[in-house]
Each structure stands twice: as C-alpha cells, then as structure tokens.
Image (tube, rainbow, N blue to C red):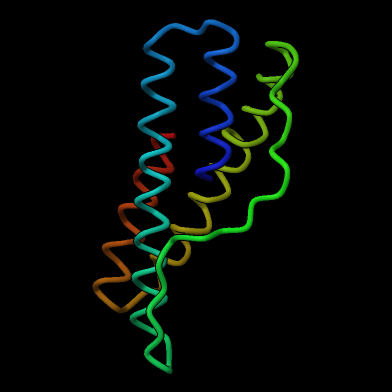
Length: 118
C-alpha cells in the first residue's frame, strides 16, 4: 500500500539505509499511487450511477509507530512485502485471467507486473 511503502521509506532513513534501497522503496510507493489511480478510474467507469471516484481525502488514524529496531523493520517488510505483495500478485493474476474489458486488463497487467517486481 501507499502507506506501507511510505512507512518503510521513513524506517530506511531512520536506520541509515543506502540510497539504493531508498530509491527502490520510493519507486514502489509511486507504483502504489498509480495502482490507486487505476482502481479509482475503473471504479468510476463501472459505477452504475456515473459517480466519479478520485484518490483524495482518506481518513488516516494515528500513524503507526516506526520500527524500533532493524529486526522489527525486517519483520514488517516480510509481512507487507513478501506476504502482502505475493497475495496481491496472485489475486491480480486471477482477476486478469477472467477479465474481458480491455481497460481492466491493461490496468490489472500493470498492477500485476509492478507487484511482481516489488
């Protein structure tokens, strides 16, 4: 998610990670923003009442604490990155296999490709 990559980037800064890791995290966060834009565009396209959806104004509860140790950060990255991103790829690939709308297929293909890289 956008939030998890933002948190992860802050943790990388906190623990003095090399610039190359920061760049990867920031690129992935940009991918997540694009995924949200794709999803909102598709939601607008298929809304039966013609409502337009845009990513803005999300309620954010208190921010999660940053990891207190490198080990804690790694555990969170394993959960978000390895488990969460893998599940996103599986779910997206499954939806892609049955999607018939070409715009939906393009959006899902972009998301699956990005999530696979994450």
